[in-house]
Amino acid sequence: MNVPRMTPLQFAILTLISTEIKGEELRNKLKKFYGIEEFGPKFYQLMDRLETLRWISSRFEQKVINGQIMREKFYRITEHGLLALVATREFYNANR
Image (cartoon, rainbow, N blue to C red; front, side, top):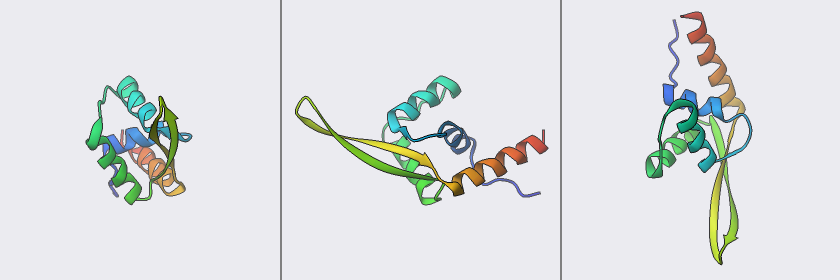
């Protein structure tokens, strides 16, 4: 039996990234649907690990708000991430 190497938190995040999503929106969905509050550096460290695994990709978008330059980070699940998500879901469905 091949146990998935994906943590429950990683699984929750990947299930919420069906289309490109802002980091802030993703954090709000984590809280709303799973009761998980991942904010600040901890959240971005987690997302960096997912990117290192090639399960997600990200990009920045710059905009000006009240004369201040702000950068928003957007995330997208990759094909590799989708395959890992499907394999993990199939594992847990088969072992209920």
